[in-house]
Image (cartoon, rainbow, N blue to C red; front, side):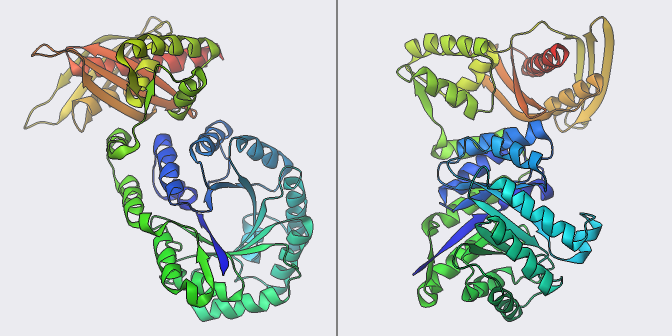
Length: 469
């Protein structure tokens, strides 16, 4: 029975179609990995600092699947992408180029001969780093068939180990696709050196049927998504192969018994408009919350800090580890959420560039929340006024207005640290700037005041590092 490989492209598509935070993308990769798909695809590097950090973080988080990332048609992009993939258990470089003249000339501004040469050269460059190189023929079925065949043949001769045909238009019927693929694959000399894959658009709601029909032509990898994103459905493909695979002489390794539960979690993560903390805490409460003990090694403690998304200097690593030992010796164990608070309290303590002079919050059952924030910055007075969905949202928006910058709010936590009517509240705010995570901590009997303190604390860390650079 032939093995069918499943490549999940949810994360590759998600960035284009939905605003997931950095932390949500990492959590999404972990969830998909539980299904034991063969590979997880990520978008190409555009912003080197941010996107490289995402690839490195996903590579560390994923324990089973291969990580596949596209490269641009130049040596610099290949080297940059491979460097980001060093933490991956297994990695694949993807060379993407269109086979249709429409995309070739209007997107890449290249003539057929020039494109063919660039594809071959890029694949050869990829082979300097790995033998896991995939050529994706974009818009494969709308161009000249003879050119598509010559492009695929050049990719194979240059060393590609996989060829994927992308049906971009989404207008093919299953039998039309099978006939087209049969004619193309008859003309390709592969001699068993490559695996063929398919990536179907779902414009006619036939992506699943087209993908399964392509298996009759020798295709052995299907690209699908675990959330509806305009391509084949991972859940549907796995179900079809489970029910009809034996008759077709094929099978896949995806855990069918986990499909419903995991895709439900993915759906919740992708659909929600709630802050990321609320979504992630729900997932952690279901059994994903890990604890660290006094007996864990320094390496494992610092690795957990990296998994939270932090990049610490050696000095801050020492501070966090020593603080962890002091607390764990008394408490026994520390959860990841508590570790987050510990990092906020110990790491990157900096002189305050921004200081809160005064704030006023107005709210009630008949008026929306409004915040007026007054800050000082190196002797200069800054003010911001904003309305928001609740007092915390209004306060954070007013801070952004005063500062004149927007930061991604990666996480926001509130917890009581004393009891009674005058209980002290602790807040943790995690902001992301240029792909790097900065956390701030605030403590007060006024939870709004504690939240503002935490936000400004994180903001000062960002500014301190920017000014130092």
